[in-house]
Length: 506
Ligand code: GLN
Image 1 (cartoon, helix red, strand yellow):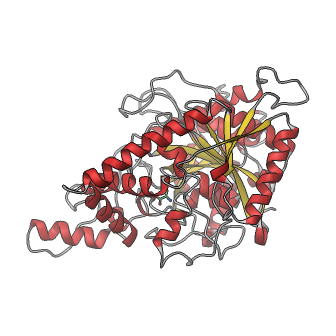
Image 2 (cartoon, rainbow, N blue to C red):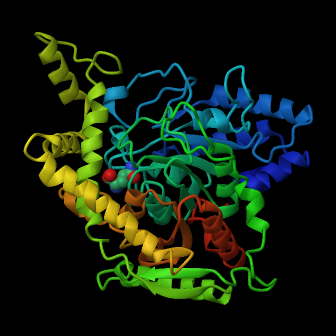
Image 3 (tube, helix red, strand yellow):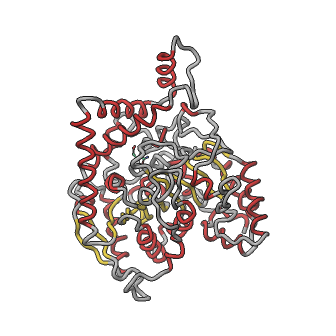
């Protein structure tokens, strides 16, 4: 059994641990060996062998003392955008090379050992930190200062981004789960590109404390795993009010896992999704949508129908506008957030400079990569006097209208379905010459981000070249439960989420 531990998901490992059939030390050692075997994927930026084995021993001790949690002793790794006291944090940037945080991000604490001296956490074991686009800006992981990440389904293709390391590690069975962040699609799109399950909750559900800020009004944390059930387990542990994040939602903690098995009102035993109305926005199925993606999604939607759901036509008329709106608001916020990286307080400082201004200038020129610099410049421009009204203010007004469009849809349906991305994962290197092409490919993930709504990617089949296709489900505010329930019912009836890329399946 030990030889196949990497094929097990979070809940399965939790049950093995509970039954005493495996120890956390065994599971952790097995996965650490796998991480080093597949180092060439580029998924990890830092592997913490010693820390992981110590955490595994601590989890085994907690279990021996009678603790029962399903996550206790199960390994994971964090996107390198979450600060960790035990491992270095880089945000995929040279700017933060060598940076050591004095504290853990809230979600790291909650999933791990808990607040120092406070409530114990879920007891998951952190194996290390995962590669990502620099400061989470990108859709391919090619903007990382520390190298690209291979897509386990085809090493010549991108894994998606910005949480590319998280998605690739879960897809390659290096880990049963990982954390990520999603500002404009960075959980959903890499999940879709690598055939894993990922959910971005409603803005405010997961604390942003200790998550290096990109665009604060959009940034949200969430889990990657190989099933909706496993995502539900992680999200239950990660989410909940945190006084250290002023935008954290003040709501009672939710057990998303327990909610999975609850029948929907009016659902009969044989048809688990009876009564569920799935809205299909016409704008999410344009003629330019790749035929292979369209075909896989249509087949998946027929499966949802056979599970009892009904499909209704809805409209999100401002879908296309979400691209310019997002690419004004996100860089505006980024230009402000990234001003703290000036060589004084965090990370890199230029070695030679004439005076203070020169030190700032050289530090930022050396520390930031091209995409980050581009965004700082765009953001500074749209916020500057004379342009603020024409760009930033207009974008904010449209953002509200985009959110209102969703509310009009939710009067007709319970969840919205569509593609995550207009195509399957593309070959590495294709978009580096044209950043705008990458921005355009974000069209289906940006609307829910701007509205602050929860969205997830569910493996829904395969397209050209055998690459995975994800179905995006978008829910109303704080209705993650319905998304996870629908995805879980779909996964009980299909096995797309169980398919492993060749070479990583045994
Ligand atoms: N691809 C989008 C961008 O480049 C989204 C990134 C994200 O969600 N962090 O901004």
